[in-house]
Amino acid sequence: MINNESQKSVAKKSMIQKVIIPVMALTVLLLMVAWLAGSFDEKVAPALNERSKLTQANQENIYTVVARTTAVYEPVAASIEAKQATIISSRILARINKIDFRAGDLVKKGDVLIELEQHDLNSQMQQAKQSVNAMKARHKEAKQNYDRAVELFKTKLISEFELDKSNANYQSIVAELTAQEQALSQTETTLSYATLLAPIDGRIVDRFAEPGDTAQPGTKLLSLYNPLSLRVEAQVREKLALTLTHGQNIAVELPTINITLTGEVEEIVPAANTGSRSFLIKARINYNEKLLPGMYARMLIPAGEQTTLRIPENSIAHVGQLDFVWLNVEGEIQRRFIRLGKKDQDNMVVVISGLNVGDKVLSL
Image 1 (spheres, rainbow, N blue to C red):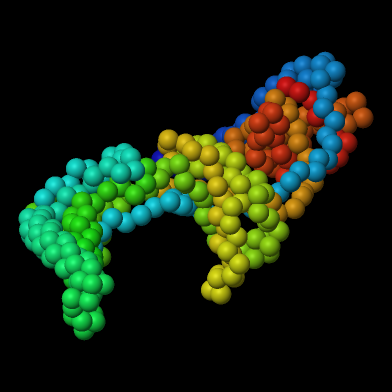
Image 2 (cartoon, rainbow, N blue to C red):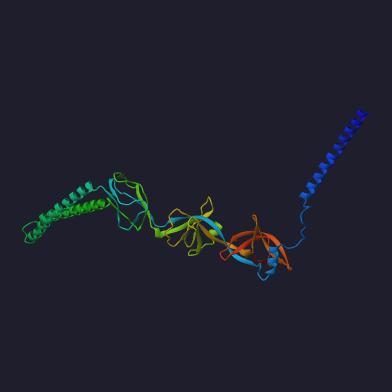
């Protein structure tokens, strides 16, 4: 009897546990759902936040959005080039004795850049000078003989044949003297080729030889350019290039040194590149010590006009990577997300989308 009651008690407890545990689990689950849903948080009535109230209190700082027509410029990749540049090379075959300059050095017109070996040329010039002196002596003798023959012919002491023979001999000596003087002049000119001078004021770009090397005719030894003759060159698509005129001013950006210069169209090559359908445009720029040939630049070519909306920078707020403004819409404050463009120098920002003409933007 006692065993039966114990069994019934155990069975009853087991039944209670089977019912209570699921109920408790369900209750806990419902409480968690209610907590996640915010049922236990303090309820806040819909209203403007403090920043919006502050902005609304300062409604006198309102900017009305207006449309503005601005010029559009198309950036074209360009490079800095030297208008006045030259390659120094030898006109004779000779060994290099001395080179006085290296890359980056400044030179003046007429400075001695390279000296070649001159021993053989000096010997040739001395021989040519002696030949000229010998012919001058013979010329003097032939001239005296001819003058004497003329006087004797007048007195009938020699025949006309003797006079003509003396004249022919004199004219032959004159021709030989002229040839020797020309040979001397040529030798002097060749000797001058052994000293290479700077043809312009400029800066050495590169050095391609060293003392002891043999200079070959036509082989480049030095290259230099005039820093005052730098200009910008770019291939501009034909639709834009045909709108440019000689003397027109265009903006030139130099991103590397973060400056913008004003260039003047100096040359428009009157033939298009058949591969890219573009024209070569060359623009003159003012001297700047930071500029070097080959530097990257951008020509800003006028490409028409566009209408844009702009707002003050101090009226823009941010949420993460999103931009928005507060608008006064019939006396009520509304938040409007916008998409921004580039910033102007007068602290105004271009709005690409999100606003319309006439919208009233509040300053923060």
